[in-house]
Image (tube, rainbow over all chains, first blue to last red; front, side, top):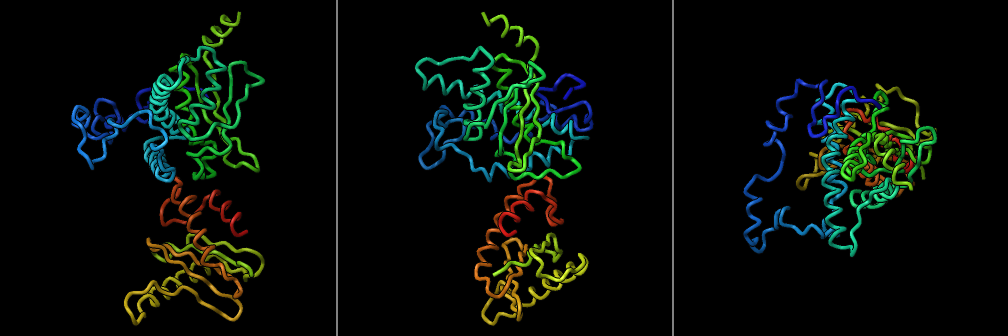
Length: 242
Length: 132
């Protein structure tokens, strides 16, 4: 999939839908995000009163077991995200690009959080500098952090040396989504692709990541996340090979 | 013991999903099904107002000589109707499961418009797995 213009990474905007520009631009939209308003950030200095749930900024970042989110609640939220986005785009490519951008925002945070957690739990925190171990850690660690289970397979493209694939047989975010026939190329896993792209970017492996439906008879929701690495990454891998 | 058909009727009385299982049912046109569903909606509204002791949720089972229809009314007014043989004892349980599948495959699907006919491969697939 090729992008005609630079990827609007930190803006949900794309040139084909400029009509909605004002209320989506980062500057004008600060009040549109549903973050609790600013005072909650300042409350971190106060000790929370007993009986009141600490706000999200005060919670311990390392408590993963009790911080799980209801998948039904997420399914409804994601459904609304897709509907909201769909109303503001002109085509499937545009919709996928916006979902990718939203995922990218999640991915940058996922990476930061995972590294923070690894640092406090592991004795020798490690940063992946080679591509394959990084891909492995996305396949297992990132997937486990985001979806609660590792992905199902990693494949390397036979035709193109710069293409790798992560395969999920039943992605939990699109489990309940049935795409109508006239939009059959659409894969809502573009959101996941955005997460992967952000993690790869953050680790220093710039790539273009897209999602594709690859259903089989037994696995109708099977999805392939296609990673197309930038040339610089391959060149560095080659140089590191010695 | 057989399940013949499943209807989903929206809160306005429109038939949003209809499917037959097996060869048991006479082939009616989709228009006839719409009329039947609308009529059932009306009958159900009447039955819900006939209760001598306070409010009622309306008819739950309508039995004939050869078959019965079990009706489940949800909190939002959507009705699930299962046409089964008389011997079928698990219709209530099956309807609960259908409701669950509906909540998952229809309500969480961003491409479904509420109150409109259900055209979702995922719903079809799960219903087939459950009843087909």
